Length: 213
Image 1 (tube, rainbow, N blue to C red):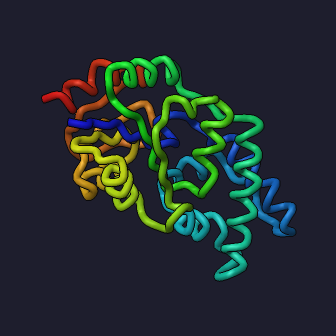
Image 2 (cartoon, rainbow, N blue to C red):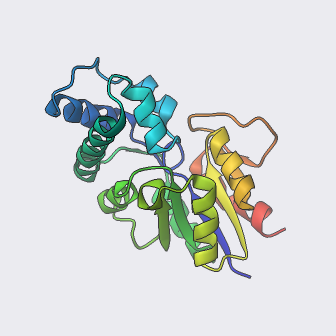
């Protein structure tokens, strides 16, 4: 039976909120708009939402096509910025992913991010060798639940667990019909009792209790 682990990005693998704030402030200024600098709290508050939802919240001063253009500019600057500067990687990510892969679990990433964001992460940290497939909102406009299901089907997963940090991650995994582990060190809480990890390396012990029952 093929059993896979699917990871969320923000609040699970890394915290890029400071770097994204800097990139978006640069893009907003470059596009000729005036807005107070985006705070880390604002950015963390929207992480996990789809890109169109984020634009509605952070750019209420523009609408329609103008808002879409500004969002596209921010995403491009952000991807380039992260590819060059990275974010704050949580401890023991590579070591833990290597151990999980060696234990026979293929690894994947699904996020509500723009196209190119996951690639920037994998480029900067040179982790392409660990991840078999990725999917995101920016590639197809589909919400996270649909993309978890899509990736699971595409990779012929007979059992899978999604590792995420916010309620939306849990809801999406339930909708997609996969199991869930809460990255409790991330940005959010879950309103029901679920398997959880206090640090990323805890996955080595927790994953078998979820997938190998």
